[in-house]
Image (cartoon, rainbow, N blue to C red):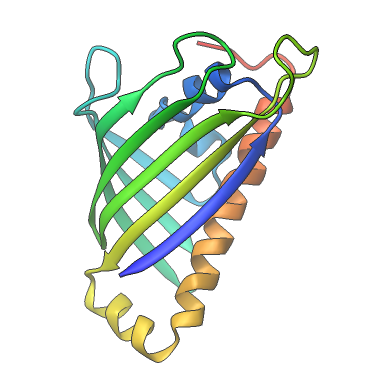
Length: 165
């Protein structure tokens, strides 16, 4: 079982971060090397929503299905939010993301921190061999993909004129 944790500081409040992160079809606009195919949407795009993701990482390609199993959107701007995703495909397990405010309430420049915690096991035979022979490579690839996502999202959020839904 692999356990990966990422922390993404973002220059927006929790509500804006929630809007972008729950809009899975928009992810390829800011996450390099990612292709997303929505499989099932729901009225609010949350519980039961499914997407197929195709990541291209250094040395391998990862196909993953994500389904929202729990969602707690922020009740008001600046309040925490959380989502739990069930992962299937090349990896199986759970991802938990929590969005927490980090700035001062009502500040001119709101900010938040997105913590993403993955607990997964590899399923695809090539990945299983890779994790036995070079576990550091799998960890490095994960770090590379998540870092690219963080950088892309920050750039996307900092670009003037981006729609807010």
